Amino acid sequence: MAYTSASLPTVNQYDVNKTILEPLFLGQDYMQYMDVMPNVAGTIVLDRFQALSGITKEFSAGTEFTSETGEKGAAVTITPKRMEAEIAFAGNSLFNKMKGQLMRGGHDFDNIDGTVVKNILLDLIGQGVQSDFNRQLWLSDSGASGDFGIYDGIFQAAFEASSNSINRASISPEQTTDAALVAGNAIKILRALYDNASPELLGAGNHVLFVSGDIADDYMLTLEGTGFTTSGYGTLVNGMPQLMFRGIPVVVRRDWDIAIAANVANINGASNAAETHRAILTTKDAFAVATDFSNNSVEQWYSNDNKEYRFRVAYSVGCALKDAKLAVYYTPDNMA
Image (cartoon, rainbow, N blue to C red; front, side, top):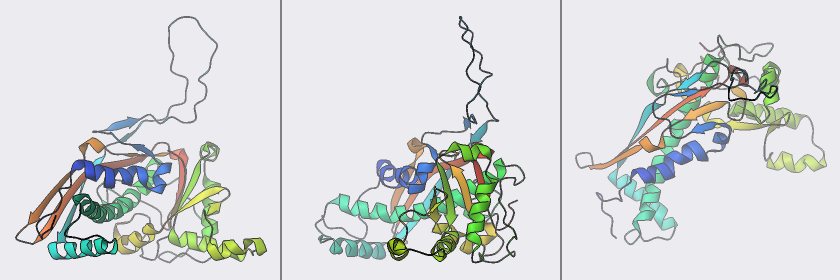
């Protein structure tokens, strides 16, 4: 089939779900630590169960059921927000980009299966959707402006669940306000997170540390400064396959550094573009992330007036920390 400037395969809801949205919620490496809820329409109430205890009693014949056992905290709710990503590609630019990719793969652009073109198109759309999704999920604050103010992201959820910032770790001495991470302070931040973790968090197991790129880099410099034996030479040269702190995997989010530096006016917990350093210590499934795959949608059309391919992808997302005791975070400034 020969493709022209106004002809492209149709992208449908199934395509978007399988190649863009489901991978966002289920395929990204950090999502393995989130409790992803894929079919939340409206508001969902999460019973905030703490560690189950006190549920066993002496057997009693009969049918009466008493549920006062089992420690149950206040309920947490999530109401996913409807989101939409609008993408426009100039016709000539899009076709040249696709032609280049196809030629590198040994394909004849004028005689290819439509699925090949569709996959390239979905990949281009997915790159933009993923970038926005990640920075909003982590850094959004409904009190902010622009596209950071649509819903409360993970950091904001941790702050609000903790009531007056009791879950914010601090280091001593504190860094100078409006300054980049001071060399050697990454290890102090990681220690502070661990030291400020609740007994419930420390006892939960399945821990994970999410850190910004500058914290990860400074921590690695600290590790390198401890000295390497001959057996450690390969680690020094090739890097660590998995950065760890006290047996806890450290997941590096370099996209935080980029997003904060570019949008600091809308980022809670930072007041200067240099303050990109932040981190969270939590446990698997402490944060719930909700969406509704059945309600996703996509629109596609060609604008003759603008000579553009236009796409609109709609989905929903929301998040919450189930229990304030299950996360502790660090930000350069106090959140508000």
